Image 1 (spheres, one colour):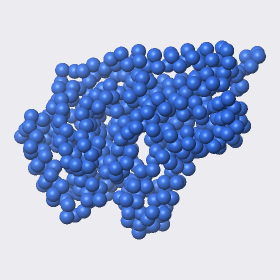
Image 2 (image 1 turned 180 degrees about the vertical axis):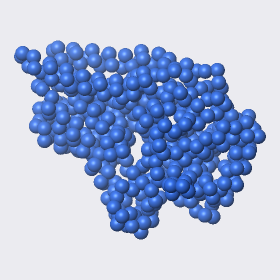
Image 3 (image 1 turned 90 degrees about the horizontal axis):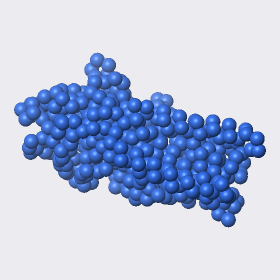
Image 4 (image 1 turned 30 degrees about the vertical axis):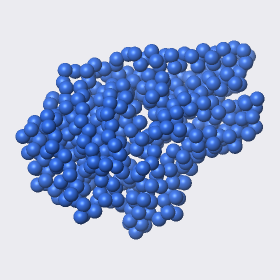
Length: 498
């Protein structure tokens, strides 16, 4: 009955199903909802032409991105200064563009050969969904937000993350959803296979959770994450600069018995050379106390004329890291000159930041190598692998003040938790307005700070050594599995009787 209803009325049911998908992510955490909603989508794709599958995939995606990324309006209007019509148009454009990906996944399922419901729903459709989600993570610089696997961080399927990364978790959630769909649409043997799948997929993940993929070293570090709690509306005001610098300086001076202190992204509200005397003072303080201080600051290269979003390491071991993966329309503007002029009139930033090069040297503290990421970079697990397994700790500095009091900071923290789990290492996350956190190698939150107020979060962590399968092979395992599944469905479909 349900399968027939979705086949007939699927176009009207997939929109609310998609709109409910963000409930599977932080801050709601209803991880079990994602496989159920994917089951609805897969059943809606059953028995309809390719064009209709694409339409239904589009509406599912439009629903999920409309409710899951509405906070883009806050960034563009409330803090970017754009007019309400422009900000609303930008959000609509993003939603419609992202909805194209589930539409393509729906179209791809129409190419699968006709076979039994279990093969089609439990294997073929999940593989198509995962492959398209993977493409969304890197095409046109990538937008991996709301990748299904992230919402499983607190569920049993998270056990696949150290093996096959977030896309492996997505595939597992989609397979589980497809098996639920096959229980509804299948008969006899297909239902028995679906039932076995429903049991086996989470059971295997729970078994993988018992494996310790990396090992703690003898090096223990006392760390402090500094959060100024300075809202985006105040951050860059000239009259606020002195008080901001004094706040972070006093927080750092008050630290006792700390090996590593981390300031957030662009904590210094000026170019680094404009506050060279202040930074020199922090460097001397760090050297005197044997304390490494990481400071987010914008730097300017007088030789090339390039601006960089940087992480400056001061103290016993000096270093510098430039952000590599930039935010389009946030840090660089891939548009013609006349559009830049329009953005300038609308009071949006228009000066491009220059990306740092790959292969930058690792930062260090007390003999431990650090893998640095700045803000948005921590949503790209494949790029973080460049620093591993050499790095013993993961560092992320961010400014989620752009998102206001929305679901975005919670979603961003959830994605950082996935990075810690994939790498099998502690991740230290210092943010301007929250959510600052110490994340354990298993992805759990050891400690977290409050939002929108000054805070100093302290803790003790150990560097980890070794490499998870994901660190060694990246997305190759998950994407390879998807390609093998698709190939297998075609070979199975060519057998006599199919």
